[in-house]
Length: 106
Image (cartoon, rainbow, N blue to C red; front, side, top):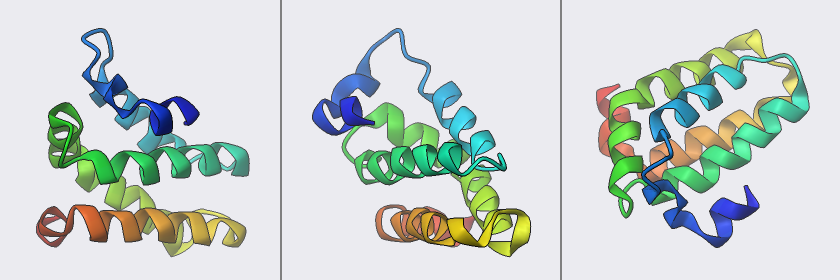
């Protein structure tokens, strides 16, 4: 996470499979362990604001954002601990703020 904050162009690295990292994060939001969910929450809240400025990130969010939204809504709907609701709400807020046109389609 700290690397993403300091150097957001890491997602331009040709060796990085942005889609795989994104999908790993979506799956990890469904884990019962709070530290895992919190870590991926921070990842997504740093990633989503960059979807307009970094093309590979924007493409992955466009193609796979529906799965992220579904994981967030499932977590809020009762699959996650109540203590994690703020984290899911922040991801939902970031989707609404930075991907509004896509969010309304999903």
